[in-house]
Structure formats: structure tokens, C-alpha cells
Amino acid sequence: MHHLDKTDIKLLNILQHNSNITTKELASKVNLSSTPVFERVKKLEKSGYIKKYVAILDSQSLNKSLIVFCNITLKEHTRKIGNQFVKDIKSLKEVTECYNVSGDYDFLLKVVVEDMQAYQNFVLNHLGEIKNIGSAHSTFVMGEIKNSYAIPI
Image 1 (spheres, rainbow, N blue to C red):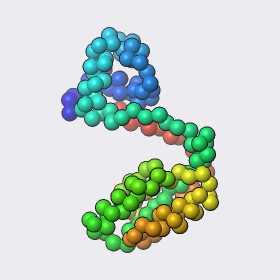
Image 2: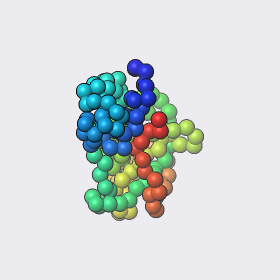
Image 3: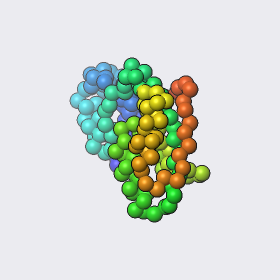
């Protein structure tokens, strides 16, 4: 990892809010020419500060309006069981995020589906098929207040 200077941080902030910006536009925002900005961005990518570029889709437009946070507790806590759970969860397209957490639960899942019936189907036919789940507690999102992918830097 290389040291981040003020220009690198400014580039990262701009890119994480709009990765579709051209190198020329980016250069003008940081008061440099295009070539050094292009080289800096490539270095940031190579160093792992920038993982990838994605399009953020609108779930409402795609008829995926139900967001559920599901807290999972495993029956047993062995490396083999934990690794198998992670492998199984990664294969479920409805699970958009999964975190191993501390506290009363072992994992926190973010599940995105069409509606309550689709969630019921997901729980019964997909999540329910995963071995060693002791309990699953669902919290349904009524409204999204803030959703940011930006890392505060």
C-alpha cells in the first residue's frame, strides 16, 4: 500500500460518488493534467484502494422492492460448518450482503426480493435448505432513509 496524499483522497472521494466521470473532468477537479490523474487512478486501483466500478441499480424499477435484514444464528460453531454456511449464502442471489457479526447473532444478511410472498419462498426453499441454521430473525424495511456506498475518508 502506498501513502495517500490529499490529491489521492480527493480523487477517491470524487470517484466513489461518480465513477463515470472522465479522466479529463477528474483532472480539472483536482487541478492536474489528465496524464498524472490517469496514472494516480491506476495506482489506486493496483494498490487495492479501488476494488471495482459498478452501476447501482434502482430496486423499485426492477420490481425488487422488499428489503429484509435477516439475523442468523448457527446451531454449531466449527470451521467446517462456518465455511459451508458462507459458501451456501454466497450462492443465493437474493442475499446482496452478508456480515459475520458479534452479539446475539452470528450473521446479518441483507435480502432483496419482490414482495412478502417471494421472501417466504426464499426462506422456505433456499434459506431453509442450509444446514446448521439454528434461528433466523427477519426485520423488514419500511422505508429507506439513507443508502450510501461511500467510505468516509
